[in-house]
Image (cartoon, rainbow, N blue to C red; front, top):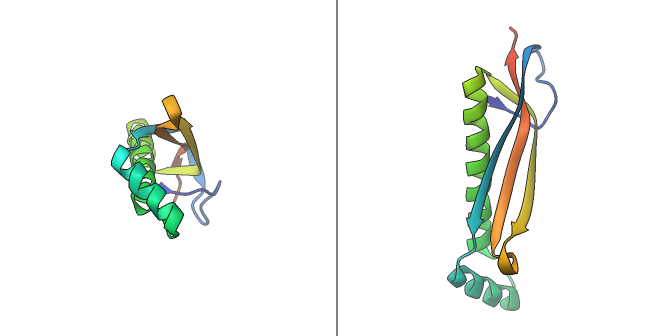
Length: 107
């Protein structure tokens, strides 16, 4: 399956628009990650634990969106958009949502 943030794929016309597909992932921030991230923030550098969590959530949201597109019989998702939000008490959870247009491509 082709995944792209662009509205078209060069040389591959859209044969059929299948509809909008979405995927969501909500992950909780671990207390130990919070402690180590705050230490890193004070010392400087990057908060690797948060970066890994963010990447995992993004990958889960995209995989869910792709699975839904496959159920439509699509072979590509165009115009993919990713959104990030913090949720929950004390902003203790991260939500990543992915959306795009599932399509069947021509030759």
